[in-house]
Length: 367
Picture 1 (cartoon, rainbow, N blue to C red):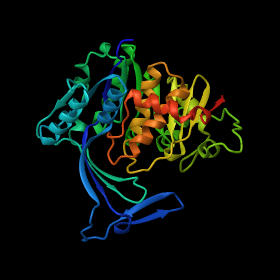
Picture 2 (picture 1 turned 180 degrees about the vertical axis):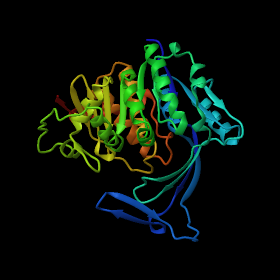
Picture 3 (picture 1 turned 135 degrees about the horizontal axis):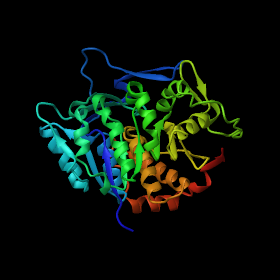
Picture 4 (picture 1 turned 45 degrees about the vertical axis):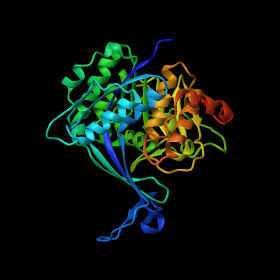
């Protein structure tokens, strides 16, 4: 079988990650809305357990993930013309990721992020998007999409999100397997554009927050109605029982997933953090729990999960196999501080999948 060529559009950043001991930073959890806050005393110098810099960003994370899984990955994005850009290029080149579509602009900094990690290590992240906001349709037009088998549109920043429908249309015209993994800011700013582009998407990937944010927009289009009286059993996972909630709506998970699938995607993936993930495909809903891990950082877990599902599906794996491999890869990623060190290679994924016996815990329901 020939190597699968993949193009990943999205952000690249330099991540500065500070790990703070629990006793040196306060955490307040608001039980009414499940939000948590890290608090630092104003004017106080806080001792960090470690501070390190790493390459991150959705396109970089997914590109490295796909490359390690045996695909031939290329990144479509922008950096500044600075030392941070040099670090990103060196890192991606060292992983074998193609850089011919990674452009550079002058007088704008390369994107960067600061992660503050403590307690459960679900880091607070401060982002300066920089050159990631400047991707425009001419950058996309310069790419020959006919040379790619998989096109992955990660979250696009600010005005760069205008390239989202262009990328998907070109990928669909080239008969590539298309993946959309939009962020919640992109959904909030351009919901109609996203929904109208789903006819070009093979795999739509959302976390539970992003899926919930689409509920009012699906209702507005008349694309969401109660279709399933779902009896999943007493031991069903919480999201399947409780559904997705917004301020004004509560919707069953199968209903929103089928509502999105009706707009075009053959596969709809909804991740629910440590509670597991759901994959709708061929009128069957599959659920896979997470694998227990010693969590050092949760950033990058979503990128690893979705990119692994995409790589597995485009390689003709079953939905169950795709979810198991993705759970294994995500567990490895969160066992590291940064977003890429834990990404596994294809042989490692296969070996861990064989040893895990997870086939016994993946659950499937017909819709």
